[in-house]
Length: 95
Image (cartoon, rainbow, N blue to C red; front, side, top):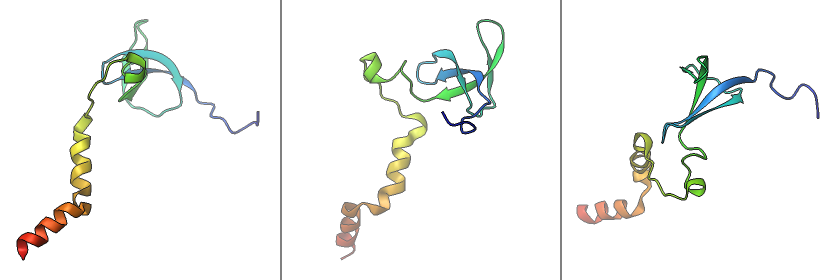
């Protein structure tokens, strides 16, 4: 492997799946400000995940609806102005 291209600041962190609150220890270079106590009594930085192998339908075999912070509504509101159907209806109503 080439030297000097890989990060050297790996540290032990807690990965926390926010969908089902499961947690596990791993190593990461991800920047985070949150910390939590682990089962061994030590405090580790927490990397929050919206979905992981513990909650993904492919691995669990269960379909879950996850809409964190109204992401679908935000998307619809953002791109509503590009919807051609709505634009034609407004033009028809004005005429």
